Length: 275
Image 1 (cartoon, helix red, strand yellow):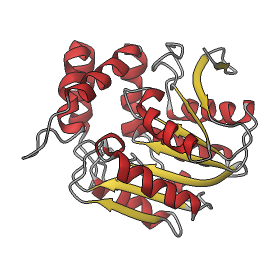
Image 2 (cartoon, helix red, strand yellow; image 1 turned 45 degrees about the horizontal axis):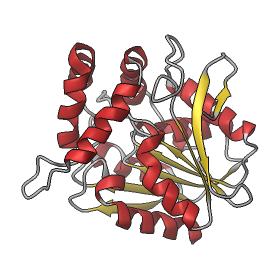
Image 3 (cartoon, helix red, strand yellow; image 1 turned 90 degrees about the vertical axis):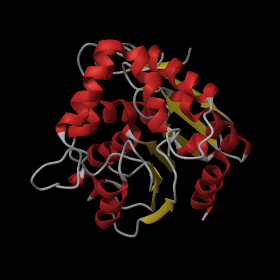
């Protein structure tokens, strides 16, 4: 397996597909998944002339299951080390959900010297948690419930989570059992401790200052029926902070729109990158 070893000794697995001589796209996945969540996009964009790279976040997928360091700062530093180790330039960063937080914190901590464009997909910034200054966020009880479900019986919880994640609880929805099983498979590859830590990382990290450092073309794409990361406290707030950000809303779309709306999503992301 291809992997880098971070400064704290953790092995981070990654995939690297397509020609090494063309512009790279680096994909960051959501919780509790792995790089495999981006397989369809990696093939599509590699076939369209890009180098595609995706890694398993520490304690997820095939990367080391570490006890410490499951924080948004460390996720961003791992991403930076991957980009630097592969010596990538003019990178297009694409982050979904927690991966959107990872990409955003990377910009905040490491800047945009190696970055050409940024795409935040159903992403958690600027802040998921409801606070006095962020009244549109979700209450801590919502994240406590995720922690409880993950700790008590994560196998069943991950299966159950697919229902709102992909909008399978909406009228007329066609349940994709294969997609549910794939979500479960990716989730169960990760380490419980790291996944529990990650809940705090994606829900309580404040990305306002990080977003203020964006100075590259940015796409903010979100489903308006996202039941996991509600659009009001995320995408609609992010575009107020990032100068010139392009907002694209998929009406009626769920959180996992890269899978449920794959062809439309791939085409829209390709258009953003090429334009």
